Image (cartoon, rainbow, N blue to C red; front, side, top):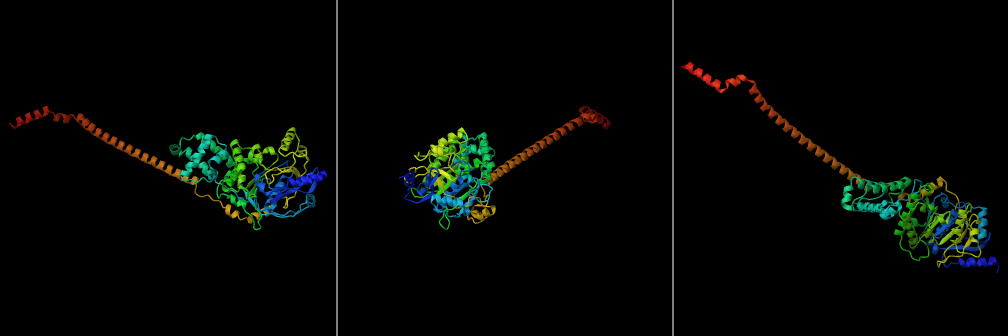
Amino acid sequence: MSQKEEFFEYINNGYKTKGDFIELGAAMLGEETITDAIVKIPLKTLNRHGLIAGATGTGKTKTLQVLAENLSEKGIPVLLMDIKGDLSGLAKPSPGHAKIDERHAKIGIPFDAKKFPIEILTISEQDGTKMRATISEFGPVLLSRILDLSETQSGIVAIIFKYCDDNKYALLDIKDFKKVLQYITNEGKEEIQNEYGRISSSSTGAILRKIVEIEQQGGDLFFGEKSFEVEDLTRVDENGRGIISVLRLTDIQDKPKLFSTFMLQLLAEVYETFPEQGDSGRPELIIFIDEAHLVFEEASKALLNQIESIVKLIRSKGIGLYFVTQNPKDVPEDILAQLGLKVQHALRAFTAKDRKAIKLAAENYPSSEYYDTKEVLTQLGIGEAFVSVLNEKGIPTPLARTMLRAPMSRMDVLSEKEIKQVIGNSRLVHKYNQDLDRESAYELLNSKIDKINLAEAKAIKDAAEKKEKVKLAKEKEKKRAREERSSRSYSRRSTRQNPLIKVLTSATFIRAAFGILKKVLK
């Protein structure tokens, strides 16, 4: 048996499946594509997560597109993070090309141009169905980890949530949370201290600064109502094809804090909402996270631990997570160890650091007698990749240099007119794109503060009026006292200043007068 025949048998045996599967492409021996040596991904192990890595321009996005198309064909819904804006073409069929026909002839898979059902989503100002979440849905623990708060600051966040729960103050958006922070630092400081203990204003100030940081990255658009229901990510169309939800994120590359906040909340919500699926044979939802380094590069240790826990646990809910990035080292090792499917496009060695990274990347793959993995990694062409998946028993398949099939849909972006048409046909736009601002903590606390201010103003007014009355009474009393003193003084003064009256009323004068009168009468 020739080496080519041995390799053909090696691949076919290694990728043999009993259940349903996705065809990714054909294995290559050296530079030759071995027709019908099909590299397959069992649907059963798609919830074991995966990695698509490779240098810029090597075909990562097209691999993502191929996987999304084939998942949709199998009735499995998909959520794509479209950071570069080149995945909306899924909504239109490929125009075809002679090179595509040539590629598929080598692979042994017929090419069929198709369009796929897509839903355009957004968490920013771009057009699309709005994905929002309320502050309350995060909860104090997750919000504290996202904000990278200290233990003391996390305790204050827990008090805020408890206070709002106790008083029926809904925490919906950022302005609600900021208002509560301001209230417990100022007007409500005494109330909070009596009920929950003393709170440091320096700690609330630090929390406020972290909130403002997210707000400046567009968090005010993400936090709020109407909350997106993750069940809407698992829809299928009338033909039984899974709907591909394309989240447009072209304006968010410089906002990693918002992106990681959104991703963690989404994964936490999916985990909390979806039921345990067990060994169902097919996933419920596949999520592709493009430019995955944006999730990890600014994440604290606590946040990384949270992500790692979700990655480990969420597969039991039938959810598969696929990280797309330039280099495997962009993904933390503990998370990388959880990824069953690996599609490694070419890596470039321009520096000593690059060569070291290639060596480390090669060690992530099973050894093979047919390849010098480290050497071939730098020689892979566009649309070629090393592939290793988990078979139906959870065992890694043979490493295969793979000529990947071409996307069936357009490998280009939709025009603005086409995007508006897709959005116009959406059933979710009318459900989620109505801005709601119902009465929540912001309004209720403002009303409470107004009442406090009115009560304080009234108390100040009453105190001022009482003080004025006391003052007037004292002045009146003083005036009366002055008048009495003046009257007595006048009487005394009048007596002293009239000598005639004094003489006429004196005893001597009266006796003399009576003596004279007596003589006259005699």
